[in-house]
Image (cartoon, rainbow, N blue to C red):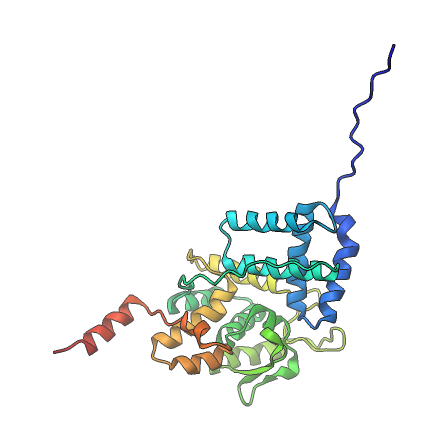
Length: 292
């Protein structure tokens, strides 16, 4: 009798562990091209998710396009899809393959923001001195979370009430202002802050484990106090520390070009996204200027 053929699938499923050498190589590739640590971390995470989807360390271009189409179908933000595209394009460049994706223009939707009462509620419910110093430095310095993580003790100048930003977005340095109420809480924090070095530097803020903060952990800290304050509006730490102060300043009459400089925007169009004001502010202006 003829023997029956055994139907056995010998295919080895790819696991994320299989891709670790390629992700490490990709991380080194990005660093050698001068990308900032936060960008390297972001791109590596996105490519890791892409490789899990592809189940191959060298996926075909068709697979990459299929992955992007799936992101579009999920109605993700255009900026998110663009960032995935940039990350995947960099990975293909590393392995010697040219690939291109269409750039998606940013949505014109108004950014979320918190009002003054929301900000005061968040500050008032924070009873942890270090966390309060971090939140106030973020807000009054109009900082990105990654910029807060990157601050060293010598970057803070209490006398001039400024902080030096090293290698901010786009690798640019800058100087930001702080208000009296922020300086006051920073002085209290510094009086209690133990001296600590991390890899030869002195982080202004560090975790209980003695490490630099990660921007994702900064986001989680903010969300904790936002929830504690009973605020249900959408928006995370970027909304709190960038969108909100910009909106408040413009609503109170600040010149848009001054706000552009404070937020360190290259393009005035980016700042103009915050030029929306509250209905109350619009009503005051309407009543004042539309007269016969």
